[in-house]
Each structure stands twice: as structure tokens, then as C-alpha cells.
Amino acid sequence: MSSDFEGYEQDFAVLTSEITSKIGRVPKLSPDEKKQMVANVEKQLEEAKELLEQMDLEVREIPSQSRGMYTSRMRSYKQEMGKLETDFKRSRIAYSDEVRNELLGDDGNSSENQLIKLREERAHLLDNTERLERSSRRLEAGYQIAVETEQIGQEMLENLSHDREKIQRARERLRETDANLGKSSRILTGMLRRIIQNRILVVILAIIVVITILTAIFISVKGH
Image (tube, rainbow, N blue to C red; front, side):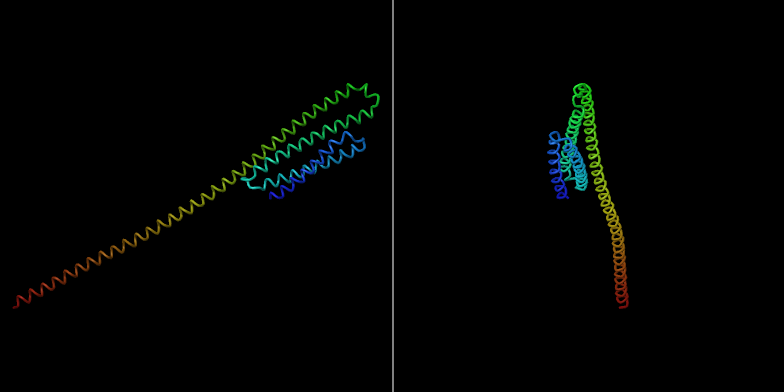
């Protein structure tokens, strides 16, 4: 499991390095090259998102007791992904401004106030987007914590269920032991009763024999 995750990590590191390099090159390219580079970066960003999803699935399959380290690494990768997307948006805004200036030519100076206002609006939109992304990351972190808490709760319930089964089996064994002890007690009581009865019979027979002997002696003495 961890080997698959590390493989995704290596792919993600290589891909994000390429994206960072390309984002830095966007402002230095010609308009046609910039257009092609922007499309290429968009495609690689989608690939990076898919890698993050695969890594997230791998982390969820890792046992909860050893998942903390991977969860922390995933959090840093998602933050890195958010930074890449922010840098790419800024690069695209700069690229759009350059194209607009090239199209406007000399009229660009007369429309400077409009361009400044447009940049301010875009910066405001970018700030809102960043806030939304931060909120999304917090929500995702909260969801991850909730999932981990649910898994821990399920494990605790399973452990309690196993303990309950053990207790029930122990109670059944105690009941069986009590039943066996009851049977043994009844058997011993019966044996003692028979022993006492046998002893009483032996005493009675001994008395009868003694009486018989004494009677015979008495009769013999009297006859003489």
C-alpha cells in the first residue's frame, strides 16, 4: 500500500516541478507560444489533481494507527496544489493584460484607468478565489477528520462487540460449570445416602447377630 502511495508521490513531484517551470516561463513567451503553454499547464494541473485523488484513496486504505503521517503529507501536497493554481491564475491574468495591451496599441494609454480598474477587479476576484480555496481545504480537512473519527468509532464498536461475545461465552461456560457442579453435588449426596443406609444395615445385622448369639448361649446355659 505505502509503495503505491510513494510512487504517486514521485509522479506528483515530477509533475508539479514541470508545472512550476512552465508557469514561470509563460510571461516570457510570444502570444502563440503563451496560448499553447497555458493549455499545456491546464492539462498537467488536471493530471496533478487526478494524482492527488489516487493518493487520497490510497491513504484511506491505510490502517488508522499508521495513517497520520500520510494524512499530513497529503495536506501539504494539497496546499502545494492550491499554490500552483493561484500562481497559474496570476500568470494568466498577466498574460491577458499583455494581450489586451498589444491589441489596444496606442489607445492603451487612454484606457489606462479602465485597465487599472480591471486589474483591481481581477485582484479582488483572485482574493475571493483564494478565500474559497482555503475554505474548501478546511472543509476537506474537516471531512477527513470526520471520516477518521467514524472509522475509529467503527473499530471501537467492533472491539466492544468482540468483548461482548467473549463475556457471553464466559457466562455460558459458567452456567455449564454450575450445572455440572449441581449434578456432581446430587451424585455425591446420593452416594453418601447409600453409604449411610449400608452402615445402618450393617449395624442392625450386627445387633441381630449379637442377640442371636446371646440367646443361644442363654438357652444352652439354662438347659444344663
